[in-house]
Length: 72
Image 1 (cartoon, rainbow, N blue to C red):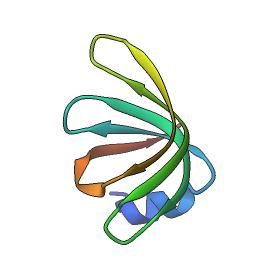
Image 2: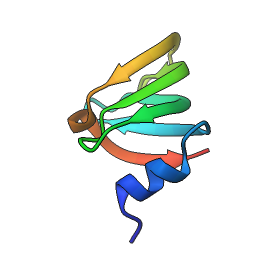
Image 3: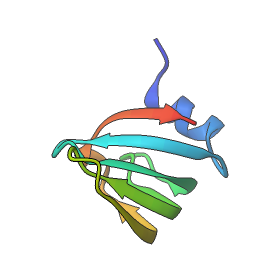
């Protein structure tokens, strides 16, 4: 099993996909994180369950909203 903080360390300055608790998906470049898995993403796009996409730019995301992390 891959530990989440180890995955985040390997993913700095790379694109990742995050599944959130409310079934939205965020895709963006990970530029920072902390021990609580709070993250900063740049060039972020949000996708909802009905395939709508929205460009968000820079996002600061609280870690307790994240269900899964996938490298792209």
